[in-house]
Image (cartoon, rainbow, N blue to C red; front, side, top):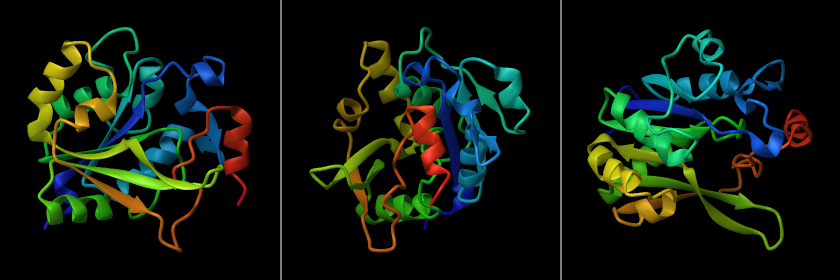
Length: 205
């Protein structure tokens, strides 16, 4: 059985925030706390340790009390660079990734990903959540992944060859998709806030 102590959590806060006007998305307020801090604490409750991937305002992120690592690749190359940064710094057998802009992600996200990874003897477990926008469907959420740290060299080779799409890399490994579409699952769990107005809307039930 994979335990929480074997899993390191990584909050992805390294983007440009271009759809939010270029602000540092992770430092925007959500229910009175910086968004990335809210995400970090929600993830901390599900893992043995946590860290942050950020590319600016590093001193501010360090005040959250967890290790902060900038991308190993320059010029904001996307979430896979954050994945690789996390894998290179991870001291446990597993790494789980969550973006900073999806503050309502499931409180049992990591446990369900770990259960599926072990059950299927997979290398990657990827979440899928309800999308209530028409047409309603359950869609994969590639930035929510549980990874075996042994995949580090594979990912390094992929990104250094110019690969940037998460799906293109995960397709080269045994990946189990884990649906979060049970009646008790929050329909907003995987809604990512791309504007300040969307972030405000998530503060209210």
